[in-house]
Amino acid sequence: MIVALFSNIMASKDSGTFRTMCPMNCHPTLCGMLVQVTDGRVTRVKGDPENPDSRGFLCTRGHASREIIDNPDRLLRPLVRDGRGDTPWHETSWDEALDRIAGTMRPVGPAAVGVWTGHGLAASNYGTRISSYLARRFANLSGAQWWSGTMICWGLGAYGLGLTGALGTHVEAVEGTYTGNLVGHVLHAERKAVAAAELAGSIGADLADCWAYSDSRNDIPLLELVGHRIVVNPDASLARHAREHDWPVLQLKTASIKEAEKRVRREARAVKREARRKPKPAG
Ligand code: SF4
View (cartoon, rainbow, N blue to C red):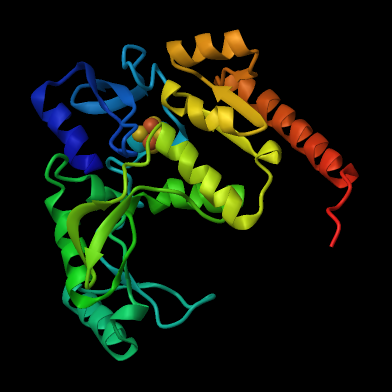
């Protein structure tokens, strides 16, 4: 995907600055990117300040995407190894790699197999995403688990933050196959607040001790639900609402992120101290 997207740009003209989207394609962010091409080679990428969503932002992955083209360390053939730890990797053919995967999957059974295509395949064929859907179809038909391609960004980010779960829109599946019907409502706006309140109730969490973060006016119901709300790089309506209600606002720019992290840690410690001081309920 990355190579294809950039090579389309390079094939079209020899030099110039071209407007595109980050090829890493975090859904639905798709940060806007300006790619500078000199003599048919990508020489620089930067955030597109005119993109209404990302407004000039490109994260480290987005900036690093230009290093992939022509990088001698790119993997062009499958690598396998016969053990973990220091066991060395060696190149193999696609046939041998696929036989090896099938030979490992069969004895453990489909329920113990997770199909993950990687983010690139999930983002390729943008619009139809046919390759990703074929892999998902394979997982559903065989009874294997299907892991979202976005695991690499969002899932691993969540592990890094120590998150233990997530709320989302429920999609109906019958005998392991998605029907395309929703179970309940799309998790959006008020519905997010309802789901968060139900979750807090089910685990006995006091909403006054809970935190919510958002950049969107759609999350005002969620922010109003909890005792601690932080507005981050808000849209115009949320910024106005935050001003009117004296809610804290974080404007996260590269220079301010460290200061913001310190402030969030400080505030979280204060909340923990306060919670420790609260008398425990009797019984
Ligand atoms: S968040 Fe980073 S990797 Fe994702 S689309 Fe934006 S710049 Fe690319």
